[in-house]
Image 1 (tube, rainbow, N blue to C red):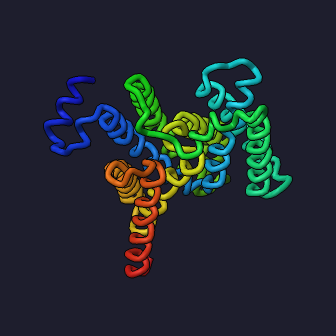
Image 2: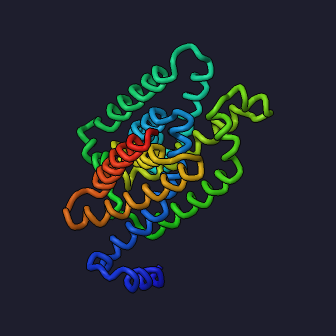
Length: 280
């Protein structure tokens, strides 16, 4: 890690690079933003924006359940709960007893309320309030290593399942006709999103993690004419928003997560105007 720090100091002649917490935050953003940009395209294609948002809000319940069960590792309890949450949503959604947005809204509301109820007992919720906006500046070297592992696993999954995911997103019936196990594809992708969202919340924040997942892909969609451009622009916009948000928050003294989201939002409106002028 020291060698990486030395390289960063040589190629980035800025005052903020002198601080290790800024170097760690920059490395984390370089790892996680391409991942969010890449996966966000499929989240939008498969109409899962509301789903990923509900996952973020269920984080509090995961912590609460972990507290009741005596699980000290909050990341573990959040991931375990989120995986169960995602699979239950998929199962109920396939029953087609009500609209998808209604099912997600019911689950999200229940999870959020249950988490707040459990964690607020005895007036202790203030201990978890930092999760609402996150703190990328607090990330440590071992946690960066964990993000790198997640990134590699996600790339492997993406290379193996992209075509199947895309086909399912276009038309489930078509996917089934091509002998694609649609339920398995949907469930594995939901689990991947659940794990990534939960493990990112500590640094990005419950209130804005979904925005970072959706905005770069939505902005890229405004100006893309094919799937290759769509993914490329989404990754580039996500990386730029992350780095620019980190640097700007340092000079403004603001929280990094919200600053990143504001930049991504500005880019969305810029690409919307560009796309509209092109007649998209």
